[in-house]
Image (cartoon, rainbow, N blue to C red; front, side, top):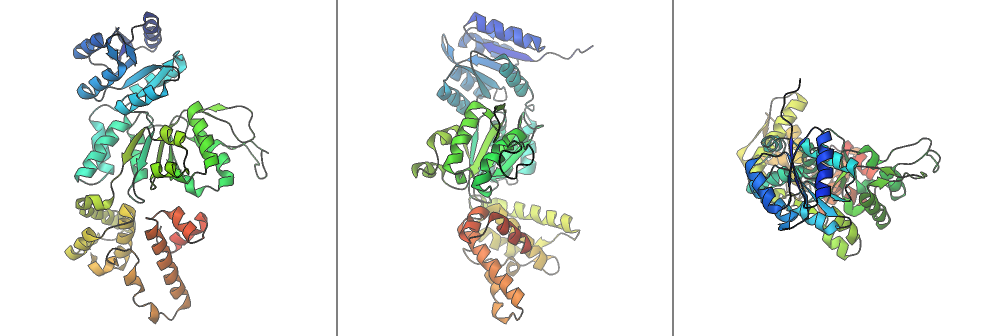
Length: 448
């Protein structure tokens, strides 16, 4: 016999019919419900009882659901709150998400959607485990990183779309993964996609799938990225690179929570949380009419900025030690140590490629150093640039044509990466290379 206590749900609504509907539905899910008719009653119940979820109407006789969200954020920040709003009140729902609500429902309440939301909220990790897990993956004790961890902790407990901004190489995808892994969708797929790496003619098929015979080469049915991420998270990296025609289709998929495969006749319902990122200024892209304003507002419900490595120089030593430890494990060699002068060189370098560039620099130095000690000259860093000047110093003495051409290729690729802040897609375009060709060359030159 199961004697474990039932989870408790607080229902806040001044309409008796709505309260009764929610009580019956949640009771059938073996949940214990408590009801309040207004803000005052809800606050009194919150003082007396511990709840696992709160469902609140937006309009209350003595206040608003938004006030209740703010009240709970101050006193019980790990209690998920779902807002119930009138149909079509998207702005209200977005304000609730920004205030810290977990998710929202629209009236009339659809019972399958209600059950799905409640089940998702009750799968949230318990308070206390989040920060520890994030600290293990997101290194650094600087104030910017402490703030970033707090924001990830909070956003992981929400279903709000998040726009992750930051320079190339700063760790935006890692941040997206942490938001996913620490949330209620952790057991479901995390599907990352580089929007700039998909040829425009294949985008609709890649995102929404296609039916057999819908175009030349479609030899079988294929699900798209939205279907692959169903129940989980779809991470749109470099979202600013989407062409306008695809932005329209993406907006509709997000609004309708449904997609139609290329060549398909019916829409398929999809349940995905959207996280997106770009190194570009998305607001400036909107102003330049390269990015749709309506899609921008859909994606940028909450913005999370990832600091550059220049903003957290105090973390460079810890990051470097972590990279060297990983390299020793991967190569089976004793761990290399950083000479104090080499560490000082790293701390004084501006790292336009951020953490990704730091990793590349240390991997190269790990290979070149002698006696397992990385000296400053092994880093091959020039002041203010990452053009590998040291690697090119003896270029004129190379008498092997292949070595010479490879050195030139390496210099040009590094220069393009520097000029595009280590955005591989943009660097490939600058060099008139396909993304696939760029990826091959990076791997060949040991820069991947």
